[in-house]
Image (cartoon, rainbow, N blue to C red; front, side, top):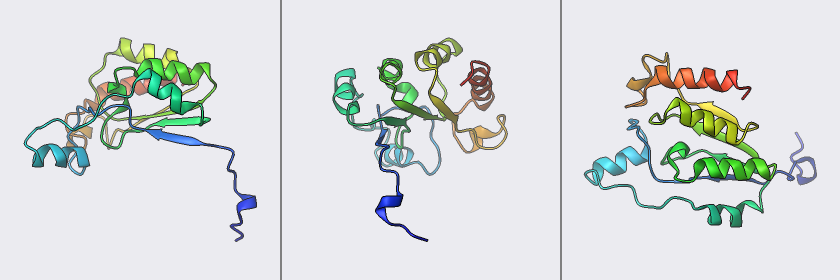
Length: 154
């Protein structure tokens, strides 16, 4: 196979962003869970991404992925506004989420903020068993939210 640079697509500039430091899950192998255990519950360090910070950075990218490695993007203070900014600027948007702790009403608002966003829901196994792997996850609720997203055309 030829892996020369001229055959690669470098037009997409993708930003994978951690927009906050919070998550309701305590997954067994997560670095955040390990940090909390080793530091006896001391909150994970960091701050929420602000709208101004996001606007400064996003102008250099045409795609953004809200895919927290140490948090879940739905808990960012400005998350819905960040989704709106992506939509208004035609920035391809992906959301990877597994945590629960928001209402159905909140999800509808988030889905409407960026109807072109692609949402991926991390539910391990059957929804009623997912809490075994994603500790504290309400898998059946999140499954219903996933169906809501599908119903709304996402």
